[in-house]
Length: 342
Ligand SMILES: NC(=O)C1=CN([C@@H]2O[C@H](COP(=O)(O)OP(=O)(O)OC[C@H]3O[C@@H](n4cnc5c(N)ncnc54)[C@H](OP(=O)(O)O)[C@@H]3O)[C@@H](O)[C@H]2O)C=CC1
Ligand SMILES: O=C(CO)COP(=O)(O)O
Image (tube, rainbow, N blue to C red; front, side, top):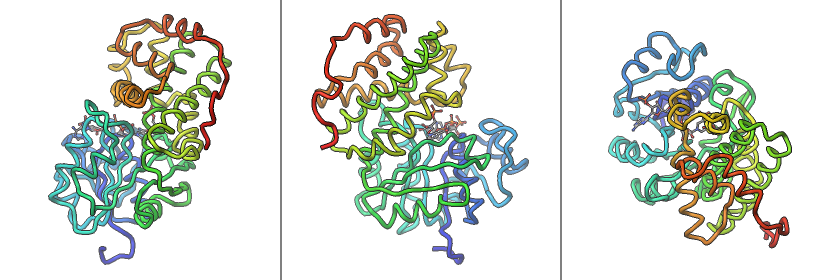
């Protein structure tokens, strides 16, 4: 640990969420270095104290440093927080590994699975970094813009290493930010990934003006899909009933700051996926995550009608209207054929 009692933190990924988390941590008095690959964005942060591309108009704390040099960001960092999109997760871990200080744990706020393999991110991290490195996932209902603005937020940090979960939570916890801890990495990662796919569904319904009943029905049955897959993959039900599941599901399904919801809204209004993604101009994790969620579901023999229809709409195989028809035509059944809480 550095001279001051507070751990020094390297935040890797200078998009909206990496910048917001780095600003939060710097405000808490930690030596914080934000790494990003785009020289123009990093230079602008250093020169103007603002991230003009991802968080325009929001002042960043004066003690936050930014760099494009990974070794510089990693030097003397007691804790590493990875906040790149899921498609860049493995390559970022491989890049940071040689520069990690001995004893420094690695946490991530990325949501999704490894594209292509469908592996959980903690599995990827364990393989790339080895068993000895403390790992944690940071997840929960948290729009970057609101965190950057200092608005009250609660999220959760899950790790197999209780001490590391506590260290990461302590770095994040502050006057406007509550960080809880838990030890269910699988459930926490599943919740963060699945809510993005389900947000597309509610966005589509709202884009088609299907009403508030439809939205509430999709959120609730979406939670049911999360709980069912969670049971199959060995996550704990309470994780999905908390910040990592229900909390993030409600936020993303109802809040127009969500890029995944906005994608659904655009599709429901008849826009093409290409145009919608171009207009959003930021990462929309559901596009890859829908495939990986369905890969997990198929592997475990779990039926996920909402997520499956989202996947088919995102592939362009069916229209949003056809997706709706399919969901409404499903057989009548018990709400909980078996308990998901045992
Ligand atoms: N924004 C939010 O409110 C929240 C986001 N998340 C999650 O955080 C993760 C990051 O998303 P977010 O910050 O929002 O995304 P943004 O679209 O805001 O930013 C993406 C960032 O990732 C960078 N990037 C893309 N590819 C690579 C790569 N191969 N190597 C290094 N950097 C790369 C981009 O760099 P460049 O500009 O050069 O393309 C950019 O800095 C996602 O998994 C998301 O789900 C979680 C909670 C909240
Ligand atoms: O994960 C998020 C909020 O918790 C951000 O959601 P979007 O990626 O849909 O914007």
